[in-house]
Image (tube, rainbow, N blue to C red; front, side, top):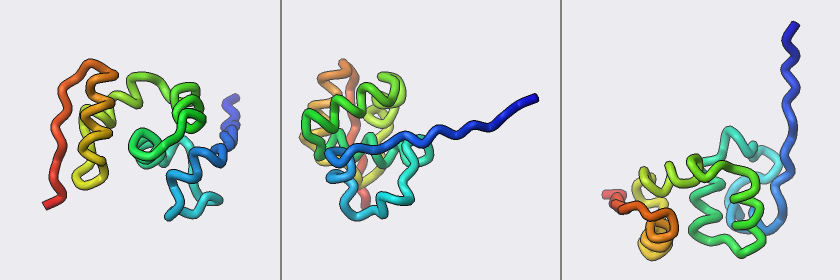
Length: 95
């Protein structure tokens, strides 16, 4: 018999500060991981980054650096995280 136990992961205030335009009550750490990862890598404090790297796998995080959504990244942040992960990043313009 399978049980679907969904664990609610609490998103700390330091992370929520990077998601100021989203309803924090409706954010889900798994469903919204691209948004959370992107915003924290762009805007996060050390506390937010510590939570991010303790919550998501390196591969999950790196995948959003390798395949950035158009218009979602600060160019300098994307370049920085490309260096950190040792990958070449390609910023994609929104237009």
